[in-house]
Image (cartoon, rainbow, N blue to C red; front, side, top):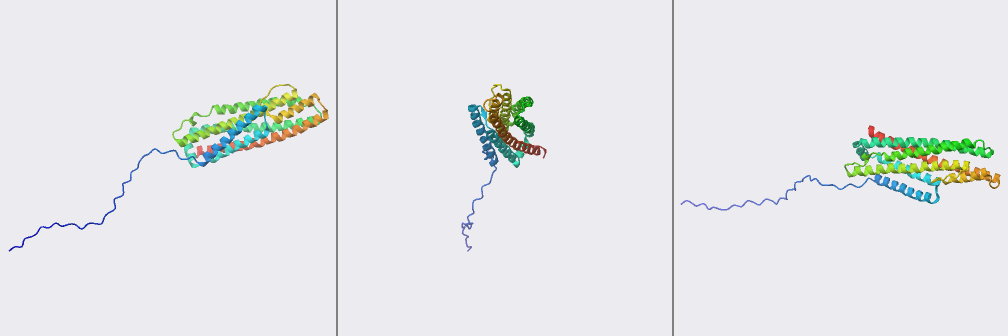
Length: 302
């Protein structure tokens, strides 16, 4: 008798539970939000806002009195130096240099603008040195009671007035001729950089024009003082105006002549300090402009 085979169902031994396979990663393209500004850009914006606040305050004061003080102008120059120094720091950032190398036209236009700024401030510094010498000569003439040199002093004041107005005109053209390429940008970071560069140019122009016009009006008002003419000059420097009024008293011999003469000498000495402060402030701005231009040139040539 043959034994029969019984069919049976076999079950495989259950394998240990495996963890689910890791999800396959995919590169997903997304629209990224603009990254946070670099702290140096934020700092530069703050410096620009401080300078604009100074502009509005000095404009309000000048509108009320008709004159600015030398201390106010020196304060504006200090703010402008801070803006230029902060810009120079920004230009040393690798990401800034990378952005500007992609837009060499920006750098070339900025180089041209800053070359004009440097030239203008160089001329201004030389003019201030000449102005100091003229005031010293005027003091000597007054001490000696010698009016023979006053005519040449008046003539030099006229030249100075014309020179300052010419510098202001040159600076205004820098503002008008700023490159439109600074507005045409392709990314948020480039747009922010372009905007801050444009703002730096604008405040540099406006502060410089205020400075040159202030000296121009003061030079002209001083000239009219010696000539005893009443010509309205707006937004000059009040220290110049005080010296002018005192000179009118001396020329017209109003009051005690010796007392007026000594008072005028004192005013002129104070005016020397005023010119010295502006000279120091403009010297610092000049050096900052030079540093900024060198940094731009390095970006273009590296």
